[in-house]
Image (cartoon, rainbow, N blue to C red):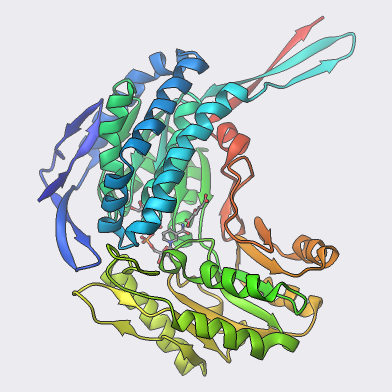
Length: 475
Ligand SMILES: NC(=O)C1=CN([C@@H]2O[C@H](COP(=O)(O)OP(=O)(O)OC[C@H]3O[C@@H](n4cnc5c(N)ncnc54)[C@H](O)[C@@H]3O)[C@@H](O)[C@H]2O)C=CC1
Ligand SMILES: O=C(O)/C=C/C=C(\O)C(=O)O
């Protein structure tokens, strides 16, 4: 049995409570690891290690920090296969997907921020003839990074890489549902030469050790990705201490297909935007709006391809693996049941798949529901999409904006003037025109409305993890 212990001050530590949680492989429904169940005592040791390391880490030159983070990126690449297999075992996603997307992106996250700190310029504001102001951006100290289960190492590193690059010491809390690759990364951090205490990883339940981390006065900022309800709790707790907080939350993302789209590309990419990673990505499009003139044609082509998707053992060549947990499978299935009772017609899928005692669900397409029914308002976070017709631009803009969420949207049209006009009126932090998940790590990443507060990526992330200080010099 694998034992996932905490990583504090460069060493693995058993939880002070001596208690462990079960870690289940969702592909087969079996416990394969034990996870440290951390408490306040573990947090105190981690805070002390992180605070103690801050002086040395924050005073390293940018080139020194950059070199260590590049080395960590190299080590992720060297261990790609083992990390991809671990990610699949923990999460249920196809190994091939982890090999192609999750682990290379974890490497890219370190690579990107290791280079960004070297290339970032500082600002100066000249008061002609009077003074010059320059902006110093100093690291915050000890910061907390809380990540979810859907893209475990990908999102864990998306947070810790900018935090470390900017000179902070980190206490990270990966999801208790998928802690394995964060645990494996700790060993690589030591090999890369990251000084002890600069990165600390505590495992355990969100409502316990996660909440203690958010509430700790020595932790100066929290970067969180996860569900909107959890984001609300964290935002409220952080506000009490005027703590900096970045919240990347849920989505109910619209895909808008105009009748002048490149039909083939729109159909194929919409299959991907719906079902990649079993639909467990906050950026997946879950409400597909199709212009009336091509509704039937698009529906037929889309459903045919969805029915051809292969679901099964994630260690083999499949399109979809298992959902992350039994609870999540129940949740997804209950949304589909409710959609049926609301009058929805299931065009593809709609059922669990019995296989190896794992948590498998068919890729599901539903039509016949309006934009205000439950399944079109709440985040399912699984392989379920709805199809809805629309008449014109005004109609689809109103429908696209009809949820509390505003994370991402996709627009398919060959008329770029129309694409820009619609993009400007959809209330989403990220808009893809004629593509999906084309990611440039320099761009601001995050959502509007209930999809979050703040932005990650590029300079936004480095700014979040630093405190600006204006220094005015009289000339
Ligand atoms: N990126 C996204 O948009 C994600 C959205 N979700 C949505 O949230 C729903 C619930 O999934 P969960 O696994 O329960 O997500 P969650 O939001 O509860 O968990 C995300 C992370 O937050 C931690 N956490 C939970 N409660 C906390 C607290 N009070 N203080 C500090 N940290 C806390 C968890 O341990 C985990 O590391 C999903 O069904 C999905 O709809 C879940 C994961 C990612
Ligand atoms: O940064 C990305 O490319 C993707 C981020 C995805 C999430 O934040 C998510 O699914 O939660």
